[in-house]
Image (tube, rainbow, N blue to C red):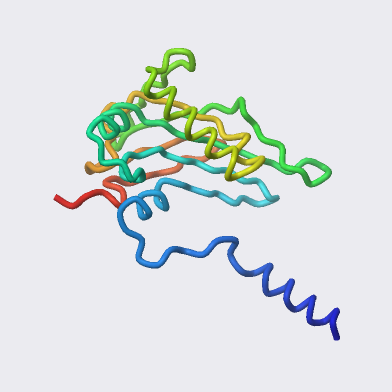
Length: 178
């Protein structure tokens, strides 16, 4: 009987989502939910895209808004299971970004980030490593000049990564209403 109960519990847990959806998310919570894309592919292939937007922060500083409007900071992770079932992450895979019209955003070379962007990338990287374990450890950040892309203005950001194009329609949820 105990084995049957344990099996039933395992079956129920295997079909439940790993995380619950928030109830009536607003402000930073809504922006955080929208700014992360998780793509669970066949064969346990996992892609995560994370757009660092100012509405997701609880900081209403004009300096933060200007920084994250000027630079599009994207966290990327692509994991594939190896023969032993352990996730192996591709940190060399590149990404491309474009605006609503398909105009490519210019990627900044790693060593040329402005100091404030270096700080954001370092803080986000540290947070990811602490909260997401191996997936966070594998998170690679890419920085683009935002061009016409703004989190709280009408438009779109597309990210081409790991053989797929991921879309963020803007304004994102959580932006202040005019």
